[in-house]
Length: 207
Image (cartoon, rainbow, N blue to C red; front, side, top):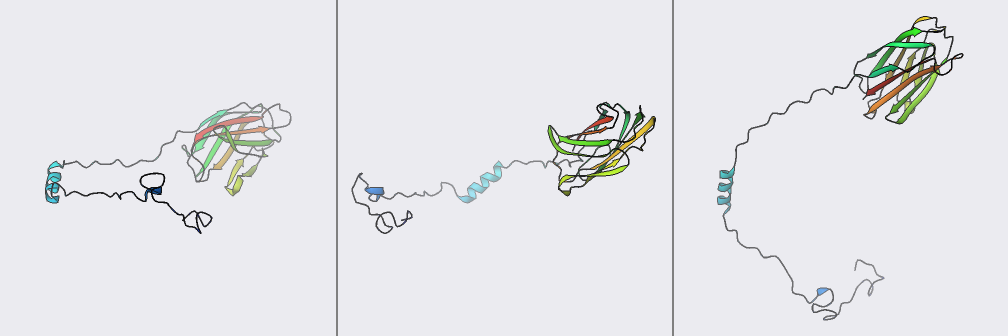
């Protein structure tokens, strides 16, 4: 008895013949049932011959080899800076992929002098923020990604930034294990003497 020794007598259960129903408890008086096999109406040879007659010739289908995944180029726009207005953006490679560094260069005009400031970057996947960090707006710096997955290299302003042409660069390396999806990167900066952002641009891209 698989129910254990607490059932029946030391693990055994007793059944009484003819009790409760005509077949006895648990059907111990019932007639056994079993399948009955009948001889086949056709021979194996006849079946094989018929199958050969029913065969239809099928032309082989050529499969097209899958080509490389083509992704749309990133969309970049200036999002309103009080000190610097960016008018031109260059992305290399033009179609970013996971595991390879992406270089972005933004060029424009400094509308005011900038002596110093704080650069901020925020990365979202859809509406979910996956990373944010900050560093000095001027000079060369790096912001470490979480879990040791790499860093974001910043090629900042040459401070003090004078009136006239201005350039800012970012290098991002999306690890190969980055989830596929649509990403939005907001790069902005604050500086003393300016209300709101001194500079700002946004990048929308698919990985």
